[in-house]
Length: 316
Image 1 (spheres, rainbow, N blue to C red):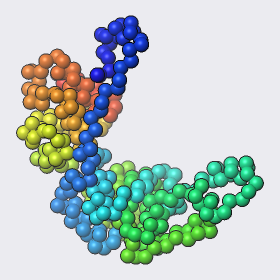
Image 2: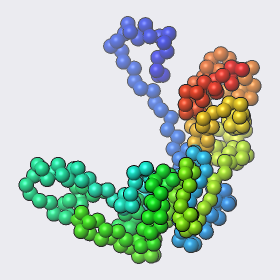
Image 3: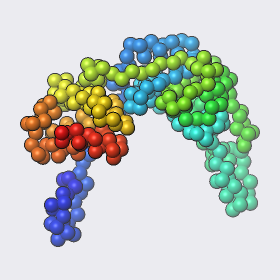
Image 4: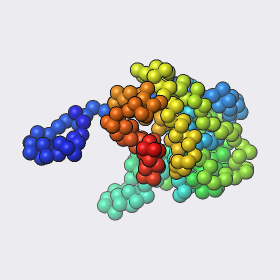
């Protein structure tokens, strides 16, 4: 059962007691499956260099190119548990890499209770360990993803490197130090969208790699592995249509769709039983099929202007 169309509105209004169940959604677990991530040989080489030197790996590439997915893949490949994620913000500080202290919550507790908390109870209630802090506390090798480090204040990247070298931190609120050994050095993946330049001192102490957008041939291989039920031959028109959009610079999109959008779009077209062959010949599409395709563009476009441009391109 799908959400009703406007044409059936009156029918539903006349039967208010007959509520409809939500339609089932198609959850494709393969799209984000870490074992299906396909790094290029060059990216695999960069990973090996970083691991051998014990250095952080800094990744750039357009959004949706698979930077954060590499962290999931490496954590799965080396059996490091779930990646520990730190999302850098413009207000991030060095201590945020390790833990966050709920000062407001602690203050409110103190105002409402005369009984002081022990250090252990304060830690349990108001300290939350993050990223590097949790990795150091775990006393085993973990993978830490520091996402979009270019959004952070300029001194934070250097603070990251200092923290990795020391492998220790203090929580003064509870008077407790944490330290781990070099054998438990975390694997560090950093991502950047190149919104601003990173400090030279930081760049000299990381392994850098730029993830290029896949070729159509490689993209077909990626999508075929992640969208079950469709062969490479069946998916070829989808890939062709997608790259026709990406290479059409007359569109002047604010954000051209990337791999993440393509995977979701392919999954939707498959679930909707859309005739994929007709993507290569618009003249053969019925009005209903054109309407379905325009609807699906809401997956590829991320702004009102981009969606209008894609639909206009289809109409022309």
